[in-house]
Image 1 (cartoon, rainbow, N blue to C red):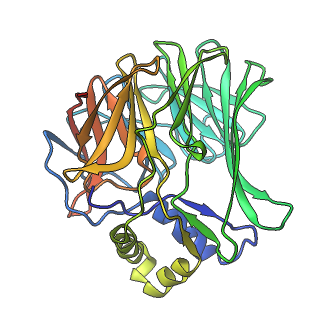
Image 2: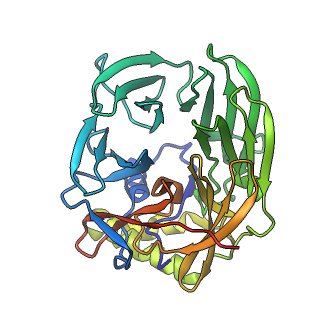
Length: 368
């Protein structure tokens, strides 16, 4: 990996000051990478994509991208051709108020907003809208149960602000079955932001009926559950270890920060850097991707021969092997949002020298 454009950060915005800076940080989260596009077995051009890609998913052979500018999801073909726009930003009964996430259930695509979920078919036809009694993300299961995923600011008794993450298993009536993750992390006193932060992730293997929940606050832990919330096992591979954050990563981050500042405002970038506390090490893992029923791939921060190390497991949690795969030019350090495995292939979104998006694809084979 050459470098990502911006690391994940914890934000201490409890004072709600300087909204221009906060907006800039949100913009940074969408990422602009300065690295050259890598060589790969297949390059799929996404030239002309409108706005910024915030999230990328693969589903049954098709790439989907959330459009931060229009607040919808766009489906493409593997030839790079636009296929469908899914959802529309707005307050109407068939519209999406504020797109947080999107997921798949059967042949449906659903877009999550605070307090509501809008369902569409793959061609963008509106199907239904459901109200949910919380404002975070939600993953629905085919039996009607769901997982609530929350991440937000917390006020600690000692006055030091922090961020809280939780994942809760709920039944079809949104009643609690089991708390799967509940963690808090503090922002270092004297700083407003924390980098690089762990991010809890949920994956659903619908064909296999298994749910995967990571907890990088506790190392490389991924817990496995059935669709009723019963524990089936876990992945906690001691070979997946935190890596030190090199100075080169921080230097590249500064370059990207200036690059994405409005008008190249170096002063704004320097102001943010004064409030940013760097951890000594990355979290143990960057994220994971479920390729149902083929397996689960964990993206580590380790590198070998200039490529990122991925480790593959069966959906039961058995280690199957590892692979070194390129991610040069990847759009952001929120790796789980821009990396995917589908149908035995590896995909990731990149930004080329011309500033246009592209999607790389190559076969994914693990070896012991």
